[in-house]
Image (cartoon, rainbow, N blue to C red; front, side, top):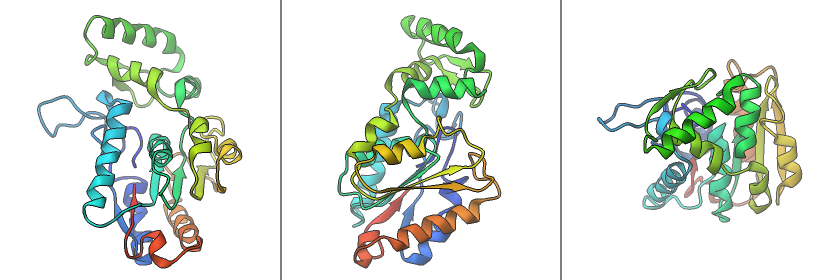
Length: 254
């Protein structure tokens, strides 16, 4: 599952499958409707700037249904960044998931917006003003109006911004409901409060391993091969019959 502004042809969704398919795993990398910043597949507004949390939940369920109809049930779930938070939420609703890989999953909740802005992303120092602007536009029936933000990812809509404030689940609240083995990676350069791997492991209802990617940023630039090898080794090391990890049935769902 890709993160905010991501897609299936960049980042982990692109570089992980070549490490997993030699293991016999079938891999599905896919776009949510909230892919990229502004997508132009139709004349309807779509893309990351227009995404909502509920829309993302629905898209991930659609991907699961897509796999199930092809005989791939109970897939391993892998998510990066916001896709990691969404992956955790998805797995909490699907206790038959055999394994979960979180790649720099953020903390979720309103604290994600506050912490990310403090670090120079999203609203930076203008968070309160942007929040008030978004609320006013939504109240005026203009939820789809574009807004500029001073930090990454720079462009959103009033409705999407308000949804991000109100409806993102909290990663640590999801942790106790997750019963499958978990691998949580975080880049060495990343903020440990925004991407709370250690606290997640402490709160998880199952075994959770934390690994820090040496020297890596949020996108694992230059460390893609390291990440791919670590994820593949971890999945290969999980106990269970071969098809437990998808070598004959389940597929890796990213």
